[in-house]
Image (cartoon, rainbow, N blue to C red; front, side, top):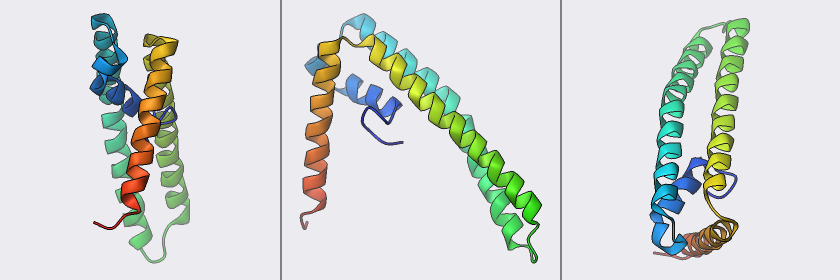
Length: 127
């Protein structure tokens, strides 16, 4: 899961980590924590499902010859779960954004851009 407004729930975590800077109310914090918890409870079993299907695909491709019909079916199954995960990220993001005021969203965007630029700067420099 990527950060930023395209990333979903990590945005909520960042907002919660910066609740003082964003001047979040107690209700806003509670709502964001509820959204985050709900998101995590939904995606955890789906991540496990994708891992299980990927193991099945690996097993199927180890056979010689591989049963391509089964492989294709398992790939489609994994992609269906991945699309559900993507939707859940978008849903959590939208729910989280609806809790914030326009000013808070703008401030969060600025915080995230600064963190991204800092991260990019550190990656390019030797340790």
